[in-house]
Length: 246
Image 1 (tube, helix red, strand yellow):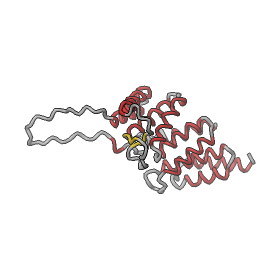
Image 2 (tube, rainbow, N blue to C red):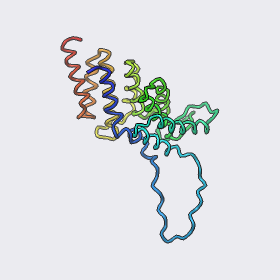
Image 3 (cartoon, rainbow, N blue to C red):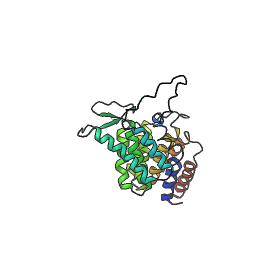
Image 4 (tube, rainbow, N blue to C red):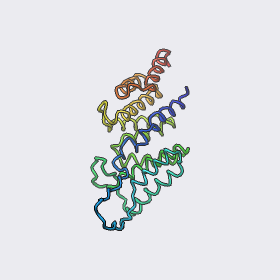
């Protein structure tokens, strides 16, 4: 199997799986559209007139991800752009860096923004990659990872972009960043994300000829994802390449 195919397989194995589309590894789960309020059965009062017309960024992000699930990437980009444009209108002229709400980081010196904005940049970047526009996707994925520095899933996807370009060191550095911030509890909610960061570190180390380090990362990844066929296949490849001295 070619190295390019392995790169694609890793991305499809971990990013396009259903858990990804649950809004970036459940990072967006708390912003799902709430269920309609129950009507009081004994009340005969006319319903109050709805006057709140504020832009619902979370709902737009949800629609964008739904469009991605349907393979409608162009429409998804437009939906995410609406969220980005709304934020730009709110903070026009303010040059402070943005930091997504609920990220868990110190917001000193930054504008705290709705986490839906980070999701919008990430979703747009993901859609652009599938549209073959990695050149445009890079800016979106960078913004998402910068505004949500504790989101290892965003950083993993950003690292995959450089892996596809064979920029091994840059890719490794980003996977290592994802590993540094991910919850390392085995059996926890982020086990797949942690395993993916480790596999990425292993892949890039192997590509740079550092097979011992690569082996260690792949073996460690199996602690988080024991059923990973990719990790086991790569360990076999490393063993063969080490045996023949290449």
